[in-house]
Image 1 (cartoon, helix red, strand yellow):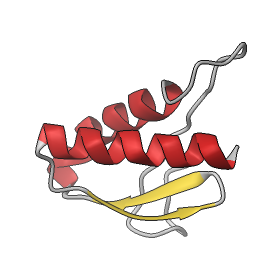
Image 2: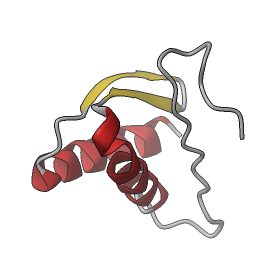
Image 3: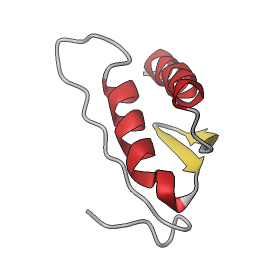
Image 4: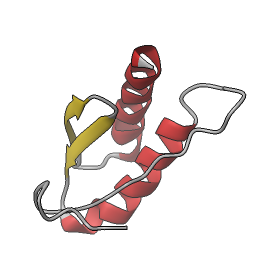
Length: 79
């Protein structure tokens, strides 16, 4: 799982650069990535992160990625 997470982080970082987004990967917490981004990039960042993380490694079972948004951890949108 640790290798998978590191691979996903590398893929996300590469795609952020390719997409020329202002979003920044701030940190990882266990199996989560935390970003900071302008409001106008939220939808693009959500799609980019989901795609990069779900495709980080080919497994026999699908990887499902939840993406949530909030001004801080307390106010993250509830799905």
